[in-house]
Image 1: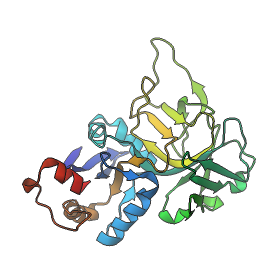
Image 2: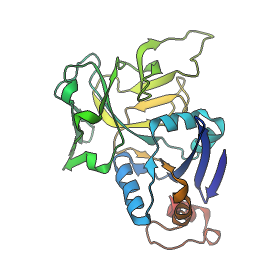
Image 3: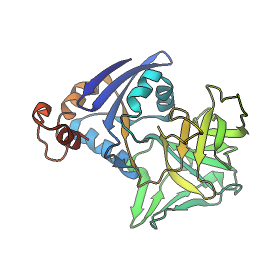
Image 4: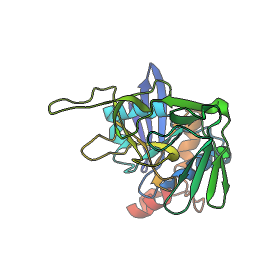
Length: 274
């Protein structure tokens, strides 16, 4: 594993399944970015700088968090959760899927997803490969415009938070809940699902969150984070993107000025770069 530090931003390299993958902490959690703005923010950077960054896929995020060295870079330095490139929607515990899933946030903001061919099924729905075009917004209402072909059903989606085995295609914990008594512990393959206790939910899956006394940041799959929560942003990058990323990382995103970090107090550098 190699790390290239860019004044509080980091480029990380790891091996996954015999392949070399590169991750970039594009925005840290000290200030963060609203969860529902992550994809449009990355797409804007790609257009402006000719890059091909993508929000980290869930399988890559999970592998990275299990690597102790990578984990030490991702947590606690971003100090916040980060989203993966997956949206999840589920109904209240024990309720089958209707024509659509609707979730209302405490501030009156609502999100809606049509269930299509999965009407009547029991389970959660996952969408991979998100783009900002998937989110159609009208005032305080967001409709997710997702065709049936992109919906993935996670069967036996849990009715409560706890330890489960991950779904093979999406990595979402599901199936029969696993219980542990005194002196026993979850195995390395098991993951902790943190879901909304008694409501439906639609949102972007997040990692790097700990549930105190229940699971570590590396093992928790969090599927209850509000879309207006502020998060860190971790992206997967191609080798061809690295020179442009290094140049962009030293730019002030507000004023477009090239920074001289040595001439600025630490907090000013942090405020400008993140």
